[in-house]
Image (cartoon, rainbow, N blue to C red):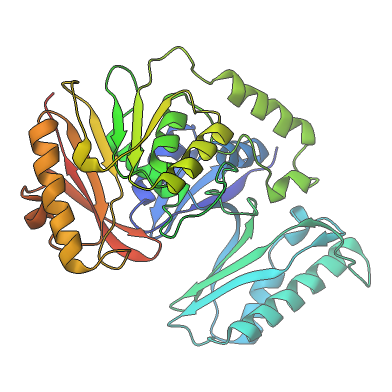
Length: 377
């Protein structure tokens, strides 16, 4: 198998979580940058990364990284890259995404045109042909330029890795599956005798991702990827590694997850999502206001994504809500751990207690903090 430099792109703030995932999967020479984690890997690792990474956005093959101040320089640098090692003679290779920040070459349409022309020229020579039909496979090329440094990648995933395949409908304030998984992983909750509770569960994403983590269900095992159609990766490898992922699922561990929401229609969607994800038996859903919460379990973990200022409620309503959350959690769940993501800047004051730790994250482009309150050991 060939060796590649691979990239797992990540939402800002989640790079260290993705790095830990890559380490757990045994990837080598891992490096972390803003918005991405790089590592060395072969075709098997491309498949493993797509099937198993819970918090990454996509997996790319890194084709090259270079400085370019002119379009001639961009053309020549792109042309030097071994595109024929990845793209088949009939492969489709759109320049699907271009960003340029603080660069002399700032026109995205011109960058797209030059990159496409350069790859075409390289492939024509490599395949000794005058025309490229582009009818098979999808090799989407991504160009990310910053301070005149161009990072050139090919997308192996296709649709974003947050598309697990279980979400039926999107509610008006969705939490991506990748972010929900990160919230659970950062809490260190893994199932066992400690229950997990999301008292404002919406369409159930946190509860579902928690169940998948506890059961060790690979997040990508029930979906397809762009690189499944690439000749460089044998079809049998996908079959074998999917089978291996299924064999690692753990149905012996005790898993208690409680998810509630005040909106009955939203909760119905959550139940359908859980059924589709295959974790409906792990989650007890209930339609209720969080003020009605009762608890007879000494220790557990609350992870939730409540409404916040630029999402569904005005500032005064949010402040009242968070004050009530603080009262309910502290009175009825005094020894539990709480993990709450919100963009509300004065959350701790409203909640009535300073967090043990907080972490800056970006949820849907909104700057948030993940407030972590550690319970009794």
